Image (cartoon, rainbow, N blue to C red; front, side):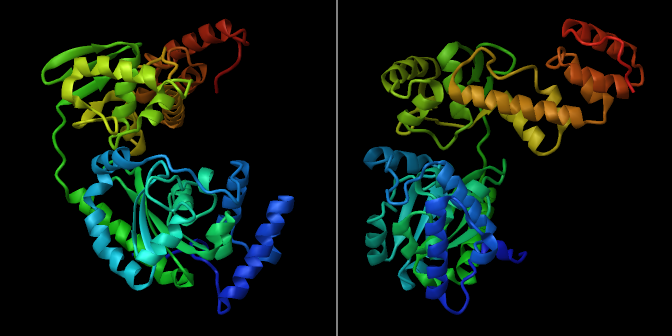
Length: 422
């Protein structure tokens, strides 16, 4: 295991209380003026950057983060979450240390919600007074600088000491956290955190959560992956087609959007989250319920609720493209990409994913050196992309067709058609 970089560890020194007071003065000055002298205050870059993000998100340093999942919604969401299979393992790895050290340990999901908060009974009671409870949002945007929230923001293990926390009530604590990734896609599934007193400022606490997170990832990788029986096609078309148990189901409008959004979120979503992902009006949950009832008539038990999720693995063309790009297989991504994701959709989550996929695809194609990759993309999704045709005109063995298309596009865009291609 490679050593932890110093920048991710808290710099406490022999006088922990004195160091905490020093950081607290720098924090107060930052809240007052927005300025921070990193040299004289010795504030770590990782902390200073997080303070700036917290300030930009308008986090109130004296206000608790909200609790967004309760009771049956929380229980249903946790039971369907991929990390539910490793919680017993994490309990064995860090639970005993948390009890012995009078700490709490927690698992956060990839959206910043605390799903499990366990550990020493007294420490849990004290943590609850600052809303460090199951169902609460502890990402940086809602809770400011804190180890699980900052680890989520940076996708890296990190330790946050005392007054390095953005919110005042949390400055009595020190925490260490590390991300847990999906072993197949590499995406963050959640964050493992240990929170307690000054003892957590020791380097061992960060090493513990990092090692436990790696063990959890190894356990997830060893689990059998059920064969997908469903496949969703939503690229380059205004609607969707779902292949389910040998049937081909046409999905129109909101049904295609819902299936695409849920296919990308196997852990599931609350009704509020899904409504926000599909509608500009975040209060449209009643409309959402009607649409999902209609969708369930089409796909049957594949669609589950509490939380809303897909009951089995669903392959999707846009996820295939994203995975190909992640592993550097640009040629494979181009072959699998007939066009944008649901190009006429205005659902916020679809628009965001469509734009991101288009940017990642185009950037990868423009960086490619294989003319065949450029030719495949230019002949389909990139047919009107001048930059792609210009690069193809420079790299293709037979440049004539590409040069002709460049001239056509330049004329359409009102550009100089006599420019020389080097």
